[in-house]
Length: 101
Image (cartoon, rainbow, N blue to C red; front, side, top):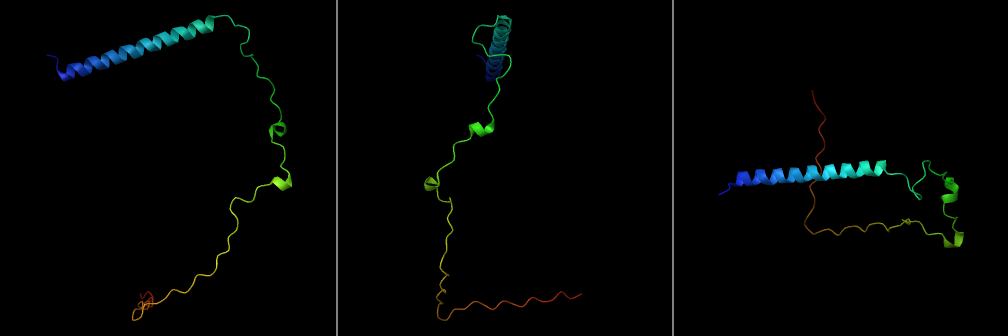
């Protein structure tokens, strides 16, 4: 019977072998592609000149179609005074004692 340690080692070895095989085949394909002559329709060696950024900008929006501001200014009424509970009051804040040497 195969122990679990041997099974794990076998699985790890199989995984490493498959990984190595896939890397080798990918490297072989890259070498073949690099050695192949260039075909028509391949990308040029030099990139074409790009248009100035002004040509890429969208046209200005007419004033009647402008969007309102994203967060309009909101004016809230003053907060009402909180009702008090009869017989309950908060303790007065203790005065802070000055630091004495």
